[in-house]
Structures are given as C-alpha cells and as structure tokens.
Length: 330
Image (cartoon, rainbow, N blue to C red; front, side, top):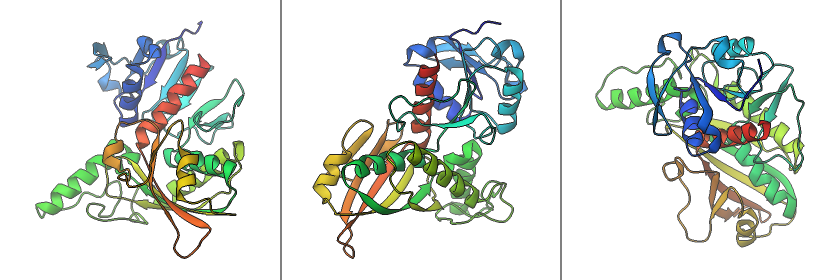
C-alpha cells in the first residue's frame, strides 16, 4: 500500500503521546494525524485533537501501513507490535523500546550538524532530553572556549517514568501528609520529600540503567558534532513531577568569565537568564520550548571553572525533536 503524509501516533494517551499531540495541534503536519490506542479496549474512545473531536483507532495493520511516519509513544511491547504490523514505514521511537535494534539511530535535530543523514531504513530513536540539553550547552561553549573537562548532576523528574511514576509520586506525597502507606511499584523507595541515588531492590528498572542510557546518548551526540569532552555524570531521582534540572560544572583552558559565557550561550533554543535575573526552574519551564540556563557563577576554588544551572521540560524537548524528525522524513 502506498504511504501518505498521514502521521500515526501509537500510545496517544501517554504523557509523551499527549505532548506530541499538543505540538502537532499547531503544526500543519497535525492536520492528518491518526491516534492509535495502545490498549485494545481504548479503541473507539472519543478524545480531542486540535480542538476537534477524534476517535482512538485500534492498533491494526490497516491503520498503520499507509502512514508516512509512525510515532511510538506507548508501552515497549506495543512499540514492538507496531513495528511488526507496518514493516517499511519510518518509525520515530520515543519509548527506547527499539533502541538496541541494528537499524536504530539516535536522533536529536536540535544538536545535529548541518547535512547530518542516517540510512533510509533507520529507526529514529529520540535522544534523552538531559543528554540533548547538555550537548547543546557544551557544543556551543566548546566551539568558542576550549573545554578541558565537565561534570553534570542530573536531577530526573518522575514523569520520565511515565504516568505511573507521576501517580506514584503524587500518591506518596498525599500518603505521607495523611500518615498512610506508601505505594512503591515504580521506585520501590520513598521519593516524596526525598531524593534518590538508587531505587529499591524490587523496582522494575534500576536508576543506574537510566544513568547509563544518558551517558550513551551523550557520547553519541557529542561525537556527531562539537567534540566537547564527555562529562562525568551522576543521575539523581528528584521529587518533582516534570522538568530536568542539571547542575553543570565546566573547566576551560582559559575561563572567559560569566558575561562571555552568557553571551556565547544565548541563541536559538537557549534562554539565558543573565546577570541578576531569576534563575530558571522546572515550574517556569513547563510547556516551554528549548532550555533555559542561569545561575552562572565562577568556581571559587578553581579560577578556570564555572557552574551553570540548566532547566528543560523533559517531555516538550523530546517531542520537539521528534516532530523535527517527522518534518525531515516527509
């Protein structure tokens, strides 16, 4: 069957699926968006897309094979099934379910060099938002002021674990305030009013696995462009619902100073909160494009180093890059 410019969104009711829908509602590509239910029982459910009523359709071959591009935003097993049902249709994977496939290629148009290309049969895996944000900052600075080494503390939001992570943090918060038991299906540890460097032993996936993914993505993105040194990295699970916070330490060959760092970073996709402006925070960045940088300060114990505070909406940043990939493919 001939493919069209139709976009199919598998898992349209997930957090990431809703973010893609929101972006496409104001994009010409979204005029022909087919919403695919990740759960068969949801097929036929009435929803809203772009201010108009729309139905979720079943995850079936006839609903996928004519699509020009398929976004994968549902559970991993659903992503695998969608691939089997629509061989040859370009896939944009926002779930990491197909990350280890031979055809998988990490994509992040926001930091890719001009003319960057991947094979036609690629599975387009969208890079983790924190790795994308760090790469953008390091590349922009390294091009103008040689970086010797860097270190990043990445504070991960509960929404990186999907709706279940957000619900568990909410339930834990309410439970603590009302002296009730704590649900621990996702984190197997108390996250509410707390910070974690490791999940409990019975958590479905270890926090260290997510840390390794960010490091892999950083290594790949930095090797594609800029060639800034890969930072040492520590991932910390923070008790926030949405938005990455990143504390980035950079040592330069020759420190250009705070004002020059601010001037160098200012540009497309980066909002620099310079001088006495209030540093960015996750609440203020919710639903905002790109990333914000502020709180830039020299390291008092190292004259060649500086600290930066970076914030980005984790869902929005990945969704923006996914839509950019779709525009390229179509």
